[in-house]
Length: 307
Ligand SMILES: [Mg+2]
Picture 1 (cartoon, protein in one colour):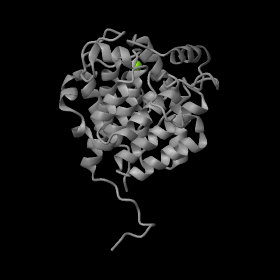
Picture 2: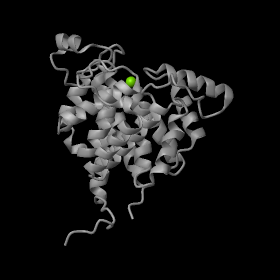
Picture 3: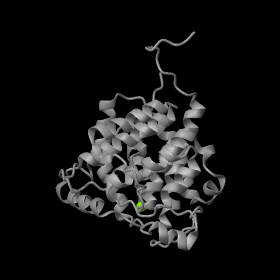
Picture 4: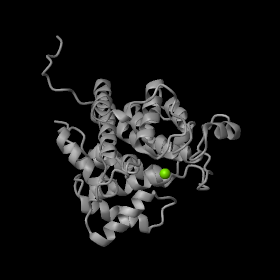
């Protein structure tokens, strides 16, 4: 018998859900580490130096060790820890304190908007940055994953509020908000194996903020502008079925490749699970980061009710 249309949507079993949540975190970190090598390079420069860049070799303008990650992953982990300290809730003050402690620990890199608005927070104590149409960078979107895990199964309004609570600490901008909420929905769709919900989230983004509509041409050299970042990621997601191909496509476009890699990685990791990520990448990833990602994914899921 076919389930009626108002039958509750079934949840994946707990093991499957956990495997996908861990996959999302590992995908984020792997995409970050993979892309960082070619950040700020053009596709032509990447081609000349690497052919196709496909290993976690480190290097790049940050002179990273093989498997080392950047701010995309470390800010996500700082945010996830703050959410866990508050029993799965996204508390703006706690996010601001976590990001500030992260900044004081001298991360390998930091975005200008993040730095500027955290410095402002130190002065004002207000965990919501002033709204700015200029703060449409991808810095809030790149660290959205812990919010996605903590809000799985919640109503859309509650998800949006949680998303903005973390995002507005540094990026108080409508385009950034729309991107964050779309990415959370894509992660949720992957975790619950609901591809149609993912397509609906993209359609909602393009209907409410048409500027995100990917152009017919390939978006190469995507900038840190969240629109360009998401266009490149959406094109790569649409072009390939498997996790490895999506990641190789997006990072070999160069530009803000660590962040396009991180964002594409969290989506494909949620969709296909940790086992779908190439073993060689998993093994090369910084072991401390790998451990932190697995622990945090499981910890955040523990706050989710799938009743
Ligand atoms: Mg980065």
